[in-house]
Amino acid sequence: DSGVTQTPKHLITATGQRVTLRCSPRSGDLSVYWYQQSLDQGLQFLIQYYNGEERAKGNILERFSAQQFPDLHSELNLSSLELGDSALYFCASSAGTDYGYTFGSGTRLTVV
Amino acid sequence: DQQVKQNSPSLSVQEGRISILNCDYTNSMFDYFLWYKKYPAEGPTFLISISSIKDKNEDGRFTVFLNKSAKHLSLHIVPSQPGDSAVYFCAASGGFGNEKLTFGTGTRLTIIP
Image 1 (cartoon, helix red, strand yellow):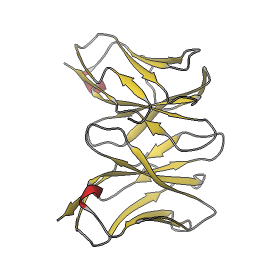
Image 2 (spheres, helix red, strand yellow):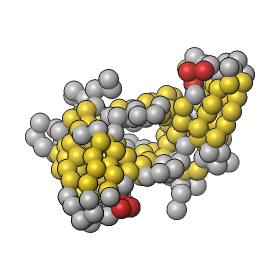
Image 3 (cartoon, helix red, strand yellow):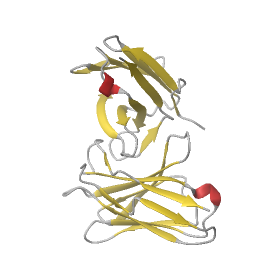
């Protein structure tokens, strides 16, 4: 157990639908990062939150949004889903001043 | 634009021998480099890192080498063990205040008993 909890582990949904992925960071970590891993691809950075505020943004689609709540858990919302959104979505956390990310085990999203 | 490249999708090595995984980068602003290891159905786990002010960092069986002029780094595992079979990702960061990591596409290492 890495200390970063992601739910759900698996999600199957239809095109056009909206889903919410949840992440609880490791205790004490203020930064949360979201990454997407499509088939045979590296991890693509989506967005980073630090202590509730957006800190960095990557190639995140406009259909996707995220937020970090006062208790530091984070949610990634994916809407108007397309087949190409099928991927593994990883959340990671860090203390914010080092580079030692701790990753969760991911949410596998399948859009049918 | 793939700023971090791992050109070998897979590598097979005999148990006990040295495994060498390679990574190239294009962005000269990167100043911190990391290797992550990933098993199936798990998230990546941090393995070893190196700052751009160094050219080598060692941790047990794992050594990372950085050649800044060539924009190249490598991970050496010696001796290789069956438990090392996993996907290895190279990642790079732009420094303090820019904690976002840019990952390569990974190399699947298989250790043959």
